[in-house]
Amino acid sequence: MQYRSDFVTTLANKVPEVTLIFWIIKMMSTTVGETAADYLIFQQHLGLTLTSALMGTLLVVVLALQIKAVRYEPWRYWLAVVLVSIFGTLLTDNLTDRVGIPLWLSTSVFTLLLLVTFAIWFRHEGTLSINSINTLKREKFYWLAILVTFALGTAAGDWVSEGMDIGYLNATLLFGGLIALTAVAHKVFRMNTVLSFWIAYVLTRPLGASVGDLLSQSVKHGGLGYGVTTVSEAFFVLILLLVGYLTLRRQAA
Picture 1 (cartoon, one colour):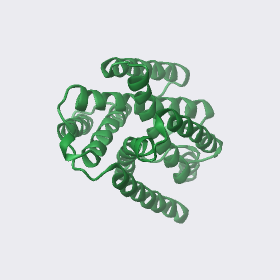
Picture 2: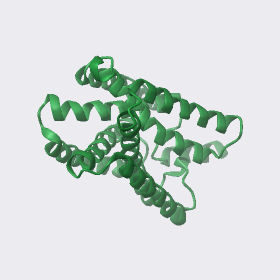
Picture 3: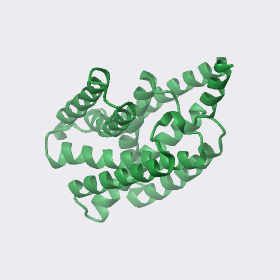
């Protein structure tokens, strides 16, 4: 009976189990968010405004499908994450390029917004754990937090790699190192699981953005020169393969 109860609870949760595959797809989705936005704006010549409007509309549609679902479904969830990643990147780009807000300020504002979101979420629900995203209210808080983390990660990543002029490789090493320290703090020093998760979740955004820029930007600008098209397509295919694997595994369970 206990097994059956746990099984029902797992199905009701609207987010995936946090495993190595989860973090791999999350990191690649952030890279796709960075490179796909550049691809649409510059390679397809859609411009920042039109790209933002199109991705924002598509995000609303996919989030509606995700929220409508009664349980976690890999394709809905990860498609929503990829689109949130792209739109979060565009949100920061609009603030920087169109409004002229400096990256250090947008990083500070998004940090404050994330803390406020967490505070309101915890006040209403008593938990920030992703293992209990099983009500409509919690799911709305969850996706709001996810959107802010992506915007924050974009601003922080650009601020460190470009604003501080440390380069894409050093930024990748920096954010990768911070994630490793978070893992050590959790495993060795027993840092709170929920806190560790959200710290790592925020940090994977600038890590993915830095990796995307490192791979796609020209050698002259500190990258490896593979181009946004190649990087976007390669990572998107890898995401599709992993999500397909998760879907098949879930159906076979």
